[in-house]
Picture: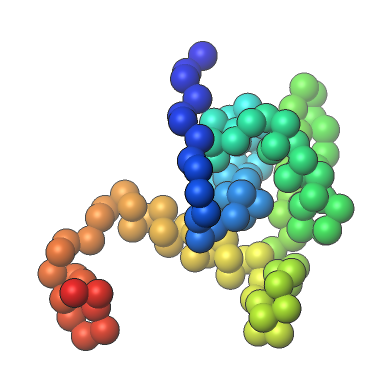
Length: 120
């Protein structure tokens, strides 16, 4: 079995709930152990997050053999009042996270940040 990556300390922009949901979106048959390793969480923390997501209606699962198949509710509106007022859904969140994954695979060149509205 592979080594679990070192946990991150401090705050982050993306919550653990969003990370778990995005990992499940990539593979609806993913195992809790794999989610934990990918998200750098304990298996127990992942189990609690999955329960939270299911109780709030963002996620459901069906038992298939020894594993689970998860189903995400893409039309469910996000919980924060500002996001809810804007009508932001799980699908919009997952779309942003998927775009981020695609960009990480092909990092931007330095000159991409020098244009209009850039950081440099």
